[in-house]
Amino acid sequence: MFKRRGFFQVCLPFALVLSGCGTAPRPQRAQVFSNSPQVPSRLSPELANDVTLYAVGLVGTPYRYGGNTPDAGFDCSGLIGHVYQSRAGVAPPRTVARMQLWGQPVSSDNIRSGDLVLFAQSSVATHAGIYVGEGRFVHAPSTGGEVRLDRLNSKYWATQQVAFRRP
Image (tube, rainbow, N blue to C red; front, side, top):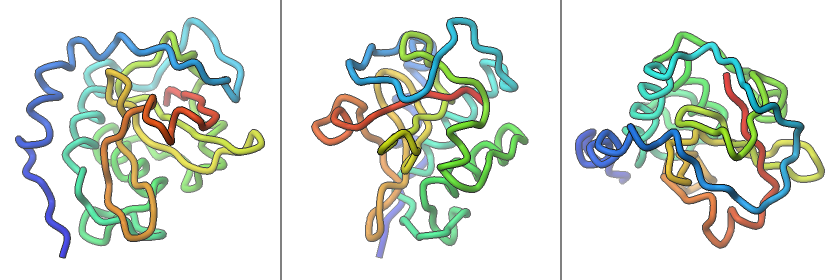
């Protein structure tokens, strides 16, 4: 029923621009959490790029509430957990609410590919994705959907409170 795109169809364009992924857009939305200019990370830039490429390769995987594998499908936290565990050997918390305290806060001026993107309502994170550069992120959006690539400045996401975290 769902057709997954091939690795090269999805990842090749990103592989060509990864060298430019360190420069991020400056969203004009309020940051939910405090931010620090110098952000330590458990992930080297190479691991962060590997996380990014793998996440993009999962675009098209069906959404499944509670899902955390490519075969079973993903919810947003399951996608993040699978990607970070598979590619970086790092296990994030299972829930989005707990992810808002995981890693280090990052300002929108300092985000890089592989960072978490957290969306919040009333200062509690309710949705998350993986930043892939150039204002885009990969996420598992909703029941009946599939893992997809979206822009932070799209009509819907630009109205959300957003924060960034670096594992």
